[in-house]
Amino acid sequence: MEIPLDWDAGTLAARIRSVRIDRGFSQTDLATALNVNRSTVGHWEREHGFTPSIVHLHRLSQVMNVSLSWLAEGRHAGTGAGVGGARASLECRLLSSSRNLPLTVVANVVTLMESAETLL
Image 1 (tube, one colour):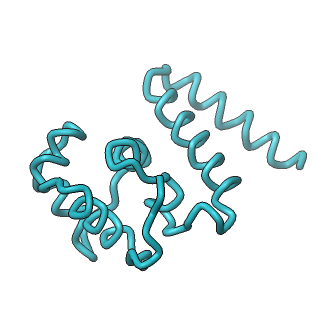
Image 2 (cartoon, rainbow, N blue to C red):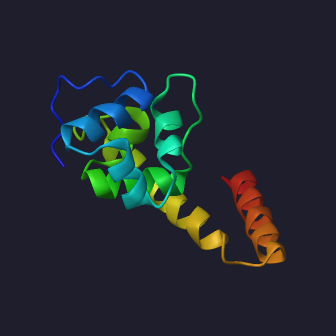
């Protein structure tokens, strides 16, 4: 998952567009790989468009073979992405898993996390 140092790390939209073009994907190709509409990819690549969900960011990082921390935050592997990347990965798993749970279970998990936060 080597990222060239000259890639624009300024905005999420710029990173999505840069990596898509670098990997030789059209917006349609990427949309097909992610199971979204082509216009959705176009919105992600616009500076004032909407932001992809963490699930889409995670899948995008896999399809494009880049780290989630670089894609989401513009961080290269050597800039402290280890902990942030691990956290982002866990948060992605938590979000993805929660979509299959009943709302009452999700509410209990949130309450548990809030309780743990007060103890730390």
